[in-house]
Image (cartoon, rainbow, N blue to C red; front, side, top):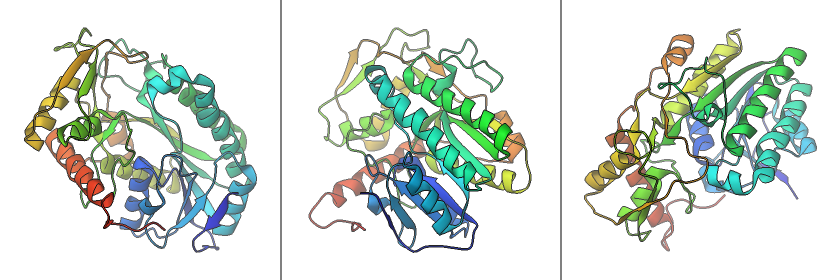
Length: 349
């Protein structure tokens, strides 16, 4: 049975971070705390998150965002006024194999969450969307004005939720910022959080695991795409920069700003083979790379048109550097290796 853990914060002003024990959500929690915004509550079912990723003193609600009774009680008990919704399934090939599971997790449960939050008086919503809503864009970089045309169930499940949020906001009077992420990478520069799922599919993590001998090889899915070297081209945004974009979005809404849909990326693309070369260079280790066929649901290139978020939110990235991103991810993976050793770095809650 789901339970609420951690200190209550009655009195209002708290931010509920769903998926806050996971990769991106945990960085949002750190960003809020670093800014002195102590009223933070995490909701996570811990299916892919970890309780030890939630800092001491932050309330952790263990449960499902589709549990409307739990969500309503959490909002009431902690005085939640803003929602940052990260909880989701995010692996494109898995969505092709299990579309109904993705529509349930990403669309149906988000509908329940938004209904409950809006009904309980939450006035500001930040939604974690994805560049996958664009599908195979005809132009690159891709701007927010491009009509979404997702090519996989993951992207469709996120686009459906975008539609629901816009319609509900008009009807119910709350403000929102929808952030469409490009490829999230790296780790907290202070070493407090990073991608921690052992079987994650993020390219940089997988390449680093291969460099550290945790995987026998790395497979490249497709080398015949219409890109400079034939491998997929992506825009890699550092995870702490992404978290500060969410802070800027919250400030925008708190200041009376209009609802927005914005890309989160740098406007610079790197190929799969570019990333592999950088991981080998930074780690100073070689590893086997196998060239395989294309993977279902992968577009050839997706690079952000990133001007609007800087202009509208005043967001300025700090970590736009592939070498630095790879170095952070490598340091985090080594720290995880120590955590899995008998003397853990961090205790469980």
